[in-house]
Image (tube, rainbow, N blue to C red; front, top):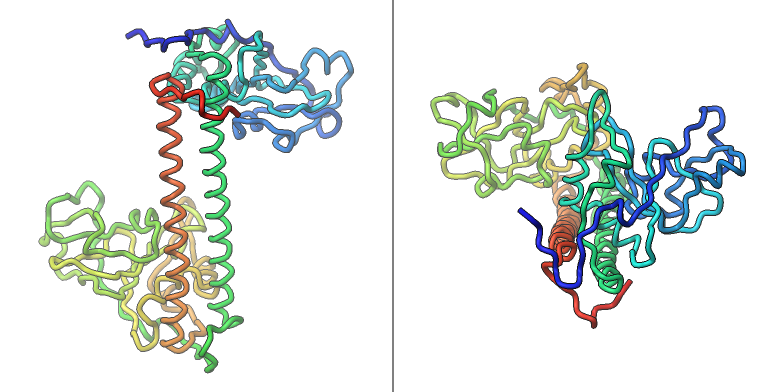
Length: 422
């Protein structure tokens, strides 16, 4: 089906608007000092290539610098990669970098016309429609490859320069919002992590608390519930009994699980006979992880459905004495340095890291009084709520940008002359 061309726009091939050139190949001994060089990783990771994004250097003769020059407004494409998904990824150099060059793992496309906004082209070349064309033209043997002939065939819609700049202005403003939210999210997570370190070690006490802490061995204050090990294929969506799979613990964005409302797989009651049903305050720990970050990942149950919920494959279901560990506080044990470090020491395996009930039981912790635990949990829950709000705002902004890309780059939505240009 032929793509409609909006009024005033034109359909072009990349070979119509860019002059392509292969990059520089040089022996390893020449790298490390000298002239800045645009490399594969720079292009892959940065749609808009700034001076700070280019880390590599190479020693060259003046003639080589002229032949392989990289100038502001140049477009670069990854030329070879282990995956088709990375091939032909584009970025645009937005800074003037004297004497910069580009490597043999990328292709340079130098604009032939002044009627082309390089930043617009960067957005366009990373859009799903253009990426699909680029990947479809790539060749693959042991590595994915593209070249100037293949890239030159890729077609895109090109509006007039002024409209390109208006589109860029709208997308840049959205990108700035996304970057701002990402930075705020990182900042809040670091603050939360720092506060947890202080509160869990007693270095910082909340107002009104000054009593001594006591040291406990978790195994002296816990009862473990029987779990049922079933694969995903053995579960369904219709049975009344809910099932907590370890994969859902790893994928959870929260340390708490509202099992009465959260969408969960189901299991037939006959498959879970004599299995302990989870209750409010139970802590369910994933006993297997593919990396150290996931060791000890857990959720605390905050509500249960009338028909019940059971812990499943690769989980440890722990019911702690609530006079020793308060509800709400248990959810954050996974961030307690003493708890986490102990489990990491025990984690064993090659491809999968594993822990056991005995490992959890062996953990010795210094714990504040239950009232202080509840207060600490309240502070951490407030931080978690703020982080969740930021995450939701970020996801919405990213979804808005995806929609804008589809609408603006296809000309389905047109910006008015009142919209500012970038």
